[in-house]
Image (tube, rainbow, N blue to C red):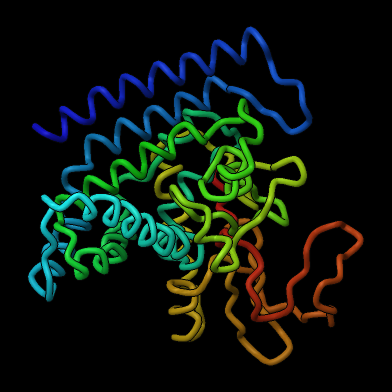
Length: 334
């Protein structure tokens, strides 16, 4: 009941803001280079994905979040009094700090990327992109443990869940191209539309940057910050080219399972599961497995490449064993 009292007004506010942004994009279209606006079919996919996520959220929350946090609460050496005023801002900051590391793992661990890639798979960036979230993806079962440190420091489970919700509410309006740069102190401290456009970019120098939820200072401190300095190319490095909500949700997960199945060694299997997206198994000295579409090709010789150089095609080249992109093998979904 309390969740409904919070969720219903929030969803109404979100719907009104999305409508306002769409009307603004029709009346006063932004003609700057790289601005994409709205696409009706993409919006429909985002909304259907959101509805499926809301329908399955109680199941996922109980298993992936409440369970691990309840265990952490049982082991916590202290329990802070929520009647003390400073516990509330402390909880808000702690949860955002935990969110930063969870979000960073979403991008740097293939298993977790299989669910988070759903949010990044749209080639458009508007308020409906904010609600394009994964649902019932098995990889989401491990994400709740990243918030256990807040509970172990004495924050009650219910307060952690509340702060998670507030964190996501804060992030909704920053999914927009309609807002440029804000006042410099705000840009320095908080996550803003500019910072989050960078985060959704699939072109360098934007890959795997700006993980912060509310505060962008975590990125500044831990070396994952980037300014918006050029037009952003939204979507994945290898876009999925589908608007089917089922394929959007499970395409990267099935691609990961296929890679694990085709791996030649146990090191390769664990790499495809836990290494950063873009990992490629090394099958022999001087050769590597190349992914073409969604199928593993035969080992091919690797030409010597100097790190940091750019080939004539303009595409980035990465040495054998290094991480190339935040995507796994390009799912050729249609």
